[in-house]
Image (cartoon, rainbow, N blue to C red):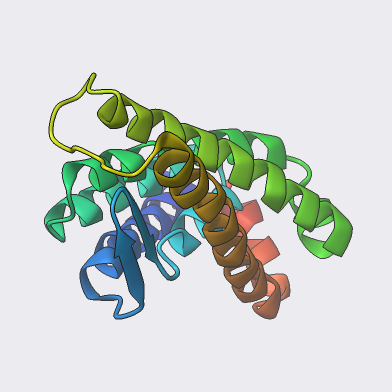
Length: 187
């Protein structure tokens, strides 16, 4: 086994473990069904996204497991599962552009907003399936605009951008070490 494969597996396992634990222990969370906002729940996914598409998908799947183990309602677990989409697309975009995007305030804000929109749309589609009764389990008395568009859609974009900012801060704070790690993982 190559050294880079062991490193890739280790990084994936560590970020996945953090992604599983955050929904279970994070004290700062807001639950207004169908929305839930757990501070830093996307940070391991974004850090994985900065490394590679494969790692990002694995960590996003682990995050969904964390929400399931934390006994969140099924609509929230499925919303967490939808993170695979934005994680993969974002990581694919960052291949070869990571340093350029993460070091530019304008480019990183635009990237964060676009990824937040993809993230929000995916979660809105999941919640819409419940809202319109295609998947039984939740009856919402609030209107579509409030419950799905504002709470889930707009709320997710804001939450995603905040977690992206935290992730970007962590990544850039570690300086050259993160770039070296990314190079080693992608050999």
